[in-house]
Length: 293
Image (cartoon, rainbow, N blue to C red; front, side, top):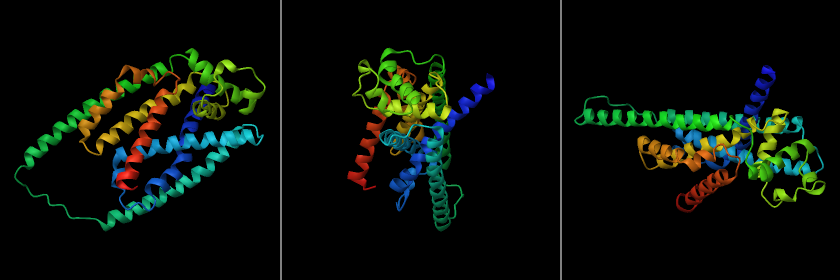
C-alpha cells in the first residue's frame, strides 16, 4: 500500500511537470526566441516566471488536446498523454539547449573587468545591501510558512465543498472514468453540475488522474496549491521589475498571507486560477502596447 501510494504521488509530480514541458516550447518562441533584450527574464525570478507561464500554457494546450481526443472519438489513455507529453518534452529540451547556448555566447561577448578598488560610500552601500538581504531572507521564510500551511490543508482532506464537487471535480472524475468528455453531456443527467461552466479546471484534474492512473481526490488538489504558489512568484517577479528584492518579497508575502488567497490555495474553485490568468494577460497586454515584446 505504501509503495502504491508513493508511485501515485510520483506520477502526480510527472503530470504537473508534463504541463510545464508542454508549455515551455511555445513560451520560448513567444517570449525568448529572437528577443534581443532577455534581461527581464534572467535571474531566479525571471526563470520562475517563465516556468509558471509555461505551466499555464501547458494547461491550455493539454485541455485542447483532451477536447480533440473526445471529438475524434478516441478514449483517454495513459499512452495517449505520455506520448503527447514526450513530444513536447523533446521540443522543450531542444529549446532550453538553444537558449543556454545563446546565453553563453552573450555572456562571453559582454565580459567586463570588475574594479574592486575601494570607493567612497561603498561601506554604506554594503550595509544597505546586508539589511536588504536580511529583510528578504526573513520574508521568504514567512512565505514558506504560508506555503506549507496551504499544502497542509491541501492534503488534509479530499474534495469536500459542494460547488467544487458538483461544478468541477465531478466532471473530472466522469471524464476519467468514461475516457471522454462527451458522455458527461450526452449520456448522463448531470444538469445540476452547471454544464455551461468552462472545462479548464476539470480537464486539469482529469490530466492528473490519467497520469496517476487512479482516482485520488486528495492528491488531485495539489494543482490548486500550485496555482497559489505560482501567484506568489508572479507577483514577486512583477514587483521586481521596478523595486528591490526586499520590497518585492514583502509584497508577495502580504498577498500570500491574505486569508481569501490562502483559502483558494486548497479549495477547488476556479477563482484563483482565473485571476492569475487575467493578471498575466494584463501584464502581457501592457508589454505588447508599451514595450513591444
